[in-house]
Image (tube, rainbow, N blue to C red; front, side):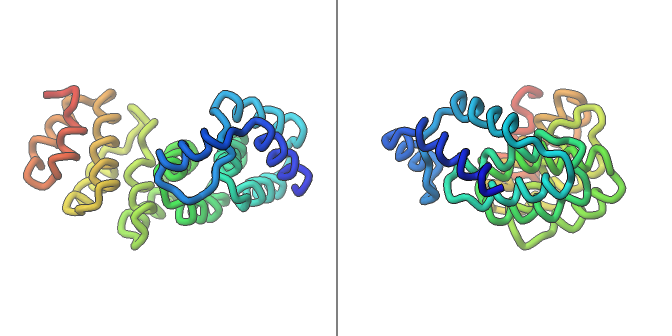
Length: 224
């Protein structure tokens, strides 16, 4: 894993740009350093990491994602998430403790949303019974990013969305004043509306007094 992380750091540093790095940090309002690598170039490096350092077991998967996530630059952490997503055979309930740690430590939307949708969402779709019960605890978690993850976990589920779970979570968090929770409620409902517009319209109108203005506007953007 040390060879992999050294290679990644070297390639990112070569492709980086100091002014772009400063601009990226300012946009995300973060003190975490960037190399300043554009997404297309970062994805090219990501593909080379995957080619040079293939993962062939769950142990290697967890070790690789953990090692990449431990690196100091934001692009390295993006690569950790990308490597995690690249291996769907290991995106299972057994990997959730690692994903939870990444959510809590990442604590910002650019990390959390990808993990919520592409990792936690896949586990939920594949192992609904066990992951559902876990998310029932996460929706009440003291960590705001864990609560946001529970709300966003069905974003890509389309007609496989568990309607009762989604609507129930939205109502549980409807009274929160936190922007990232209100935005997540609206986003989750708006995405589900692509598959079930009538259900979302009815829910939003029925609970208009409970939902924040932001949540309601986002949910009904293409409905009213």
